[in-house]
Amino acid sequence: LDAPSLRCDIRPIMRTDDQFGRATPDIAVLRQHTQQHIIPLLEQGIVVSQGFIGSNKAGQTTTLGRGGSDYSAALIAEALDAETLEIWTDVPGIYTTDPRITAAAKPIQEISFTEAAEMATFGAKILHPSTLLPAIRQQIPVFIGSSKQPELGGTWIRQYVSEAPLFRALALRCNQTMVTLTSLNMFQAYGFLAEVFRILAAHKISVDLITTSEVSVSLTLDKTDTSGGAPTLPEAAIAELSQLCRVDIEQGLCLAALIGNGMSESKGAAKQVFGALADFNLRMICYGASAHNLCFLVQEQDAKEIIKVLHQQVIE
Image 1 (cartoon, one colour):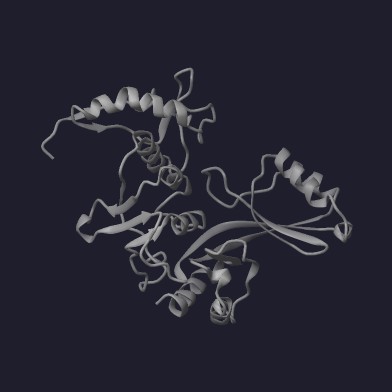
Image 2: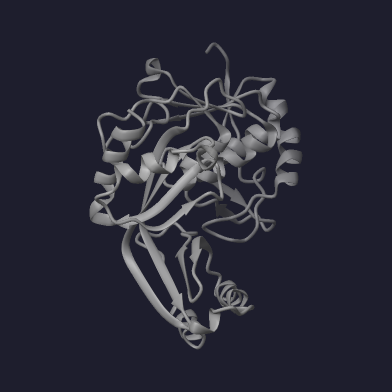
């Protein structure tokens, strides 16, 4: 491009709170600072800035956590009322599943915001869930492409797409922790779950999936930080929960998710999925709350084979 480039330090523009490591940007202040400082620079040339970092009111540098660089780009696009947001990474767009799991994975040319958000939430590593939020708020189309191979094109993420297949893609998220709470006091009683979630909230524990029966509840722990390994239940939380019920903790699990459209409203959709996986043990099946996903826990040693089989049966 025949245009001058200008450096802009994003830290005084990206105002955040004091949560070092996963700071939350102040959207209103960011828009104000962007209008004041970045737009005038854009009139002079191409603005180059950093992602992932910001600063608090005291001027101390903060970081936005995992996915923070792409999230920064999305936030700036929102503040600028941009027409499009381009994310250039090391792969040419979003695939029907991780190509490292099956060579039959196919690139997706166009996908809806809802489908992409489901994929990001359930483990597709190319995009962090937070990246999509600013784009969704402002209805900004997002392009994902490879900076190494731009000629291969990529994936457009939009509000509305030309095709909405029943089964679009598969995602896999490992390092899952399942907690099962069992008590006869749950039977035809009220207040048990409220007390469980009060304890979890007091220990700042976020729950991802949940299934219940008359005398037990199983849940998975949401991973809210950037450290490795499976999330854990603090000993203090286990001690409190143990006063209410028996607490069983299981790890070595993966969450498999099938992403699509209208699955809970389509006759025979579940039969196709569960028929293909008849030889595998599935846990914590979550189906029906969303028309765009069907997910379940599996043993880690079976996870990749399950993705291969399901991809072959319902996507290829």
